[in-house]
Length: 629
Image 1 (cartoon, helix red, strand yellow):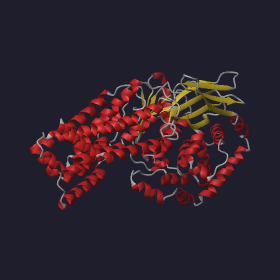
Image 2 (image 1 turned 135 degrees about the horizontal axis):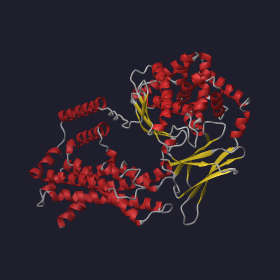
Image 3 (image 1 turned 90 degrees about the vertical axis):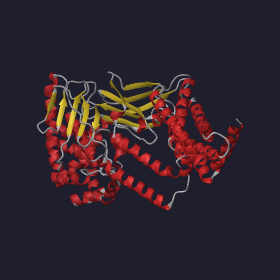
Image 4 (image 1 turned 180 degrees about the horizontal axis):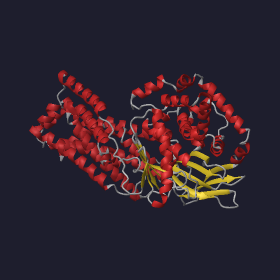
């Protein structure tokens, strides 16, 4: 017992500086995260962030001090010469390091839990669950770090190799590191909220920690510690050069050979499936009585997609697979999967539904998604994103521009944006949040004006140059953007300066706003939306979303809401919770209460859209990210 205490005292004296460093890092991280990065978020969210970043560094430094440095300095040889079992020094180091890491993570958890309890309903059972998750995570992490630091001169190359192997498995196979053991225990999406015990992750983490400890003990006792002593010797220049070449070769091979595996094709197995002549559109309509509507949609989409493929020179075919989902309303749709070769989406394309179904609007969304998928999102880069929206709408409407009802609908919706300037176009993402579906119509006006002045082919040529681009997902994308800014592409294709076109665009919209659509704009401006937070003593927060109309009331409104992460500012509607309400007759306001869904300090994104009688597009009345006080 005396030898154990002596060894523990020696080891703890070696890690005093690391302990001080760790406490300082904990304090700085906690304050900076919640002051700058995580404002309005639950304090518990920062625990996974800390555990998967700076806590890893602390564990590695601790293992390096207790194992690697002691071997290099020769202290370990003196300890092994003492009449004590070979495994005893290793076990003392293990339990000293484990105790120190548990104290650090427990202190962080206690502080975060105490502050969380001031605004959220948490109890002792939840604290025990979080502590067990944290403790098992520390157990697996420390076992791994101690093992790595017993590998001496091989630890860095083996660590790099292990990281590359994990990344390869994660990207090329069905294995997901984020869903495995220690990573799952510290999952940012479940740790602060999940009340269920993650038994599988706990078992996997415990197995990792125990396995690493056993391997370390075997190495320490093998040949009376000769294996560890051999590895602790300084690396020679020849070995260093070989390892550097090996690491560089592994990195190069990894970057060249490893590619994301293509997704498994989605197949319709039912008999009620319509397949277009070109094979680009497949629609599962579920019931024979819906066959005609499915056929109509298939023909409509197939025409536009076939012409688009020819215009863009797409040799490789892609498929748009649609499933009827009668629970969806209006133009709501949910993407099941989306890739360069396949897009699978659920939508309610039946005409007999409470909320209006617009086939043209759906086709616009699908063309937008095709460009987005084929370019891996590059077509949505700020500066050219507006053109993607406008081109998608123009491609569907270009052969129908003489139909007055379509033209009127598009123009009425687009007039929400009466003053267009370069600044707004270059920040199209934020403008799109405020406009909703009307953003397509606003952009359509610009592209349609472009086509009327320079012809359809000029617009198609510009699309081929600017949004029909390959994604490399490396520095080549950045370099291409630097060499091909939007303004120069526009001027090259149309021989006119971008700023001059924007001025013409703005004047065109202003003329329309003061003309036949003046009354429409005045009517739409009567719609207002706001939110209010009601806090009753001893009860969960209640959020009231309200829409007011001083003029003609809408048919119905849809409320969207969802939590935001610290780095998020908006969400796609399909990723948000939604509630659709009909407007009560004779009332001038519509209200929705959300009791106890969101907590104080949480960031929430609210969107409200309404359908009015003279527009096919939903009118976005509000889009705002707020912090619940």
